[in-house]
Image 1 (cartoon, rainbow, N blue to C red):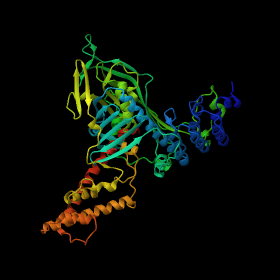
Image 2: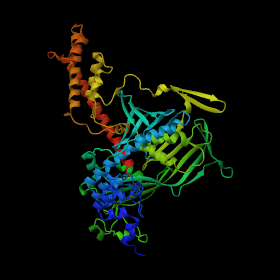
Image 3: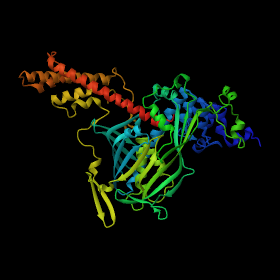
Image 4: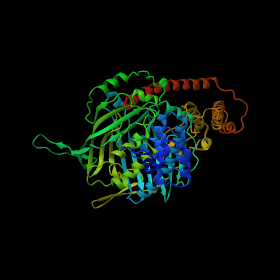
Length: 615
């Protein structure tokens, strides 16, 4: 039975206005409060909200009206988000609008979500635990380059501290550092700090639920250009056919359920079968000139050969791969949206793609995950560990989100002391919980208490306090007055700064970029902050050189000369040629070492890129 326009307008009034791009009438309906927020977020029979429908069709005016009415941009269908659909249209103005509101809404969710998580944690018992992450691969050379890390988690009341050296994966590069994240819950508000122990800096941010809609800056143009020239990619777990079975040990006829000790706890071993990792890539928005294949790297042949063979690891098994295809027939390519409203809103018509013709490449991989579950582990998964995973998934690396998604499945009973799951195409992760309550290795600020069969710990509040010697990362001009007093230390500091790679602390980043370990492009030498810092460093070098020269000639007032150099500059000193030559030679040797390190890093980056991309 054919559906009429009146039926569609009655059942899906907002979707009907969006389909026909009647944005003036849509605006009048929304400003008159005719529709509730629940109706604005309602989905049609195809599973799209009015905003997602407008974005997919490329109706910029309707998208702007819905965003101004407070529609949620964090919506998706079949794994494709509103931002990705906006990117697929190829419209930079539409993408900028959707991306800006997405960033704002994510910030609002984090501002209210982190205090909520800390309130949940405040009700759970205090604990200390270490999460060991080991990344492995069945590709030999890639496995040698895979990183590992141990996350140390402290929890006391509504306060959480996480120590890590593996920050994340950004721009085909594993990001390393020595970082500490400190969350302090304070009722409806929270504060978080990120300490960089290598640089001695601390980022601080106070979070509280935001009320009303605020202006949010548009993303930089280079971000828009990068998205429009890069394919879209999604990866998700299809768990519809998943099944868990107990592993067996022993020989035929005497087989029994397998159990193994993990960090002193007896664990049952399970296998998860029929779990599929689906990877999809869309490229209809990418210009033809940007689709040229990249230059072949030295390791590409090896990785391609390994990828084409049947993998030896039982954990990850490629199942099938579809070549890029167009979701439209040739006669449909002349129309931006060949689907009629009768086809779209009819329950009898099969579902078809709407909007711009799609070019999708799909790869499905079946894998087996392994779990080691303990019935009497001292931690509670839902009360203590899941909020920690939520915190780290929100501010840190995507591998925490993948672990969270896997744990949220219907696992057998017990605490997952050890889990082995795939993360990417040929990359696996093995996560092990250990040193619970510091029972294996003593940890500062942690005291373990044994009361009969019950094990607990006391976490000292001092571990959530920032020690002396750290400076605010948002105030780069304060760095010379923070702990660098003598001229030798000043000279060493100045030389280190002059040899550092690009990307200094005066880069303008917000706290979320800092916590994710991301850094925006340098603002260039023309900014006021950089010019001032270069002047300070130049004065420091000159003062230190003058101090060393006078000390060698018998002068006894090196510190006074250094102070004068940082303040009012005196006459240009007569630099010692031998000292200058030594400094130049040292800088040249450092540059050569840096070139060698850069070449090695490029090879590592290329290997990791090839292992993570689905070609």
